Every structure is written in C-alpha cells, then in structure tokens.
Image 1 (cartoon, rainbow, N blue to C red):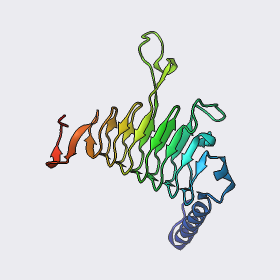
Image 2 (image 1 turned 90 degrees about the vertical axis):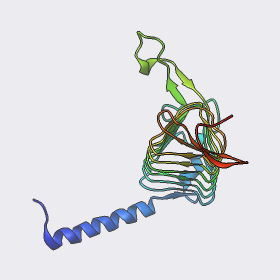
Image 3 (image 1 turned 60 degrees about the vertical axis):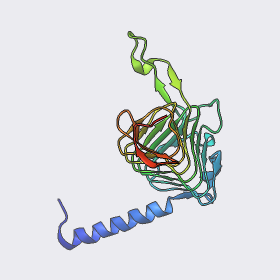
Image 4 (image 1 turned 90 degrees about the horizontal axis):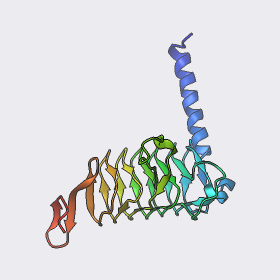
Length: 214
C-alpha cells in the first residue's frame, strides 16, 4: 500500500531529516578515532558520509583541509589487510576536493598535489592488467604498475579516467569523460579518448589551441 497525501509528506520529510542528520553525524574528521588509522589525516580534512569503500588506511594520506565527497572509494591494494611495498600508496594534498562517487585505487604510487578538484565519478589508478598472453584470461594476467602524479591546482571533470603512468603538470584542466595516459606539462587543457592537448599556455603568445608545439 502506497502512502498518499499528508501522511506521505510528513513521513517523507521525517526520513529526509533523519538522513541528513545521520550523514552530518557520520562525517569523519581528525577528531574521530578512525582518522588515526590513516598514514596521515590532516587538520580540517573530512570524509563526507556516506563513505564509500575504504581500506588499508595506513597507506592513505589526506592533506589538511581536504574534503572527500560521499561514496568515494579510497583503497591501497587488492583487499583489506594487504601489505604494500610503498608507504603511503595514495597521497592527496592540501585543500583538495574529491567529487562524489570517485575512485582512487592505488597499488604503488598515486600523488595528488594541493588544491586539486575533481568532478563526480572520476577514476584514478596506477595499475592495469596485462593482455599479451593470448590464451590466458586478461583478468588473471600479471598486473603492471605505473606511478601517477597530478599537479597542484588541477581540475578533473566528471567521469575522467586517469590511467597508470600518467603525470599531469600544474593547473591542468581535463575535460569531462576524458581518458588520460602520458606526461603533460603545466597549464594545458586535455580532452578526448585518448586525451590530447586541446589548449596550452605559451609564455610569449598566451593561450593557444592545440596540439602542443615543441
């Protein structure tokens, strides 16, 4: 039986108020005991609720005043309890904003600089499966790691994918939906699949349309 009229409206309002109260209360900050399990959890940093999948926290570092949105997945390794070869594995700098539903999945080294912002559902990883053995399922083939570095001040639009081995310079803009792999300098606009330089800044002539000229 579906509620209608004022009973539905009152019950709906009560549920929304409770959900807001629960999410506000469940925000994780430096004062929470859980924050002590991280490699570093900065002053003013926050994991908004509801939190996504988070494990191997001792390999994760959150900078001061960084905000991680709801349902963000932050992990080091393939599963909880795994011993990693580097520490920290995932480093997020100061004053960053990680959009809701994003995934940052580290195995070797992912470094985000300061004051980086992402849209929702951004995916960043430093590991992929091999595919060269034609008689073996791709998912069982040996993985390959490639460190990822994203320069301070950058903006990653919604649904951006950052692949292993990528290095982005400072103040990089990545258009929504782009799939990025490679090394790019400071002050460029990237877009497309695979991502290419759409615009770049030249100190003599200012902003120029791509491709990047050497």
